[in-house]
Length: 130
Image (tube, rainbow, N blue to C red; front, side, top):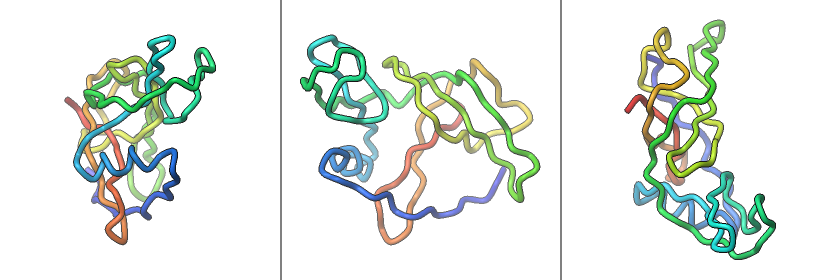
């Protein structure tokens, strides 16, 4: 297992501030459209499915399934990059952490975990085996 490294605090803006504020409380939010009913990632005000501006923040389960994964073993520290399909529907790019990199696989169930950021910034979401 790779050692944990602190990353720079994310840059926030008015559109993403609710996400990062919730992250500080350990809550994982996604945007969802009240017009078509679909959730989407990355968080943005306009629905990418129907182009409606009727979107809202919703607390997500923080659970999902690995859709695709690549384990980088030639890097100075081994790490895994993956697409995770959230239980709510959207697919997001992330890292898989706290796992056996030789066993992580497509179809594995995962859950959000929070990584600290520098300068007391909000934590950053990554996923670990569920």
